Length: 252
Image (cartoon, rainbow, N blue to C red):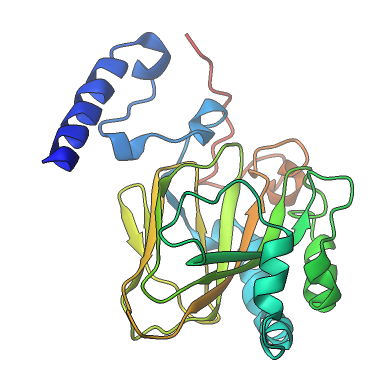
């Protein structure tokens, strides 16, 4: 009953919010349509087509190198946990059980020293990522290994824009019920395959394979294609490809 009351209140609040001019022009019909990227550019939805973002294909192409670096870390008992602990941030309450979601930070271009301790054990991956303009040429990019423990879940939350998230599956027990929920879409990770999501939509994840294997991915945050530092990567003859709308969002 508590959850029902909360959802009802959220729906009522959303309906009232959409009467305000600041939100009304966005065309959101339900709470799952809300996203922070729309503060800057029109959103094509919570999941982007892979052919729009070459970086996603690049990650698939270097999959074996990334996996080899992950395996190098996993080969030493306790090393993954150690690297997770030394770079932990304030996101400690967005998942159930403290160690269900563990991130090894490799790069954070928002900081003076973008390379992190994990790069000592994943040098090939770090070098390739930082050479890409989507990471090295973006002043708010992030990359790291992410482990979701069997039975774990990441609570619903929203990222800040402008940005996109690109994942590539590294070691995914695909036979187990592991789901990523983004806006009104449901995705599943696949080993060696990438996908692009707009994590400024409400999103969550669940590994319902209790007693099964953990899920490992490379998790990256990249600049939005419409940002000034990135547009030249996508433009052809001065035009962005169909599917990427960079029209500035004028606020009432």
